[in-house]
Length: 217
Image 1 (spheres, rainbow, N blue to C red):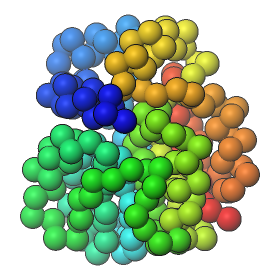
Image 2 (image 1 turned 90 degrees about the vertical axis):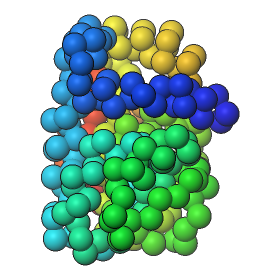
Image 3 (image 1 turned 45 degrees about the horizontal axis):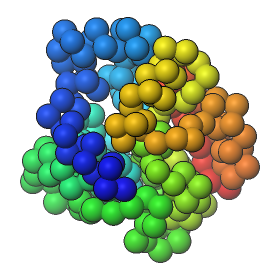
Image 4 (image 1 turned 120 degrees about the vertical axis):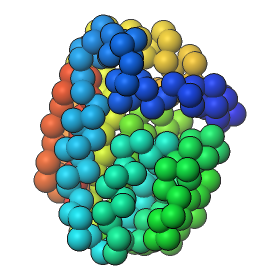
């Protein structure tokens, strides 16, 4: 776990530029190694699943730097939002972006041991999280546990088996550096996992990325 904290501490100044393709080098990296996936579009599709008049309780794990969610959260004035991340460095940047939003709490914590009661949230949002979580066999049940029946898991993350170039990058660079943590889902394994506990209401892929919305049964 310390390896993960260290990796995000070292990358916090380039994290946003890579995700948002905010520089020539980040756009080149995405084109060469991620098949030109547009994280901005994926983020927009994911966040569109949350209506602006949502008034329930939402858990965002991991919040990261809130680079994609800051504008959306400014619209969710009636929601109770909890933003959780394992990395203090990510939370520090998120706090700057979400400053002044009184309906948002920022919490340092572990998705594998969420400090919340059963069925506490109407929505769990997880953007670019599950490929980094070190213990997915705890993370998935914990997310399920804190969701209300009928609540929605809305997420996007890397899946293996759709791009040899990306799989090689993840295996030889991103995982050893601590940014990604195996094992990784495939499209088939993820659908099987979700179908066991959720009704899948939306499921889409773009290269090696997946995004979906699923309702807890």
